[in-house]
Length: 141
Image (tube, rainbow, N blue to C red):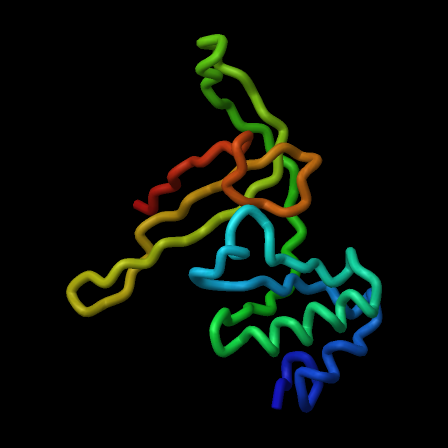
């Protein structure tokens, strides 16, 4: 049923060891829990009972608030300049980056048009558009 996980049902996912749970389980769509890293469970960061409860909750909520299971993507640290409006200075932030690609339909063909890079302070594990993030558009030539 789920060959990439080597399991036959979602219930088997609840029994994965901490090492096997290198996943993010998150609510998708228009749920009030879908922003600001709320509604996100990182499998390696929670106990087995908490992971099982998160899987059960995702399955129960799925008809109204679908959830997404993704492998956790470990980010690397980068340095990026940004303008600090409080001081009027150009500063540099050490942070983690998430890239969100954007695809467009052009002439009947789907093409990568660019990406939004979200850079958050290096001490943050979950990357989202928080107050202290830098949002950088990335173009494809």
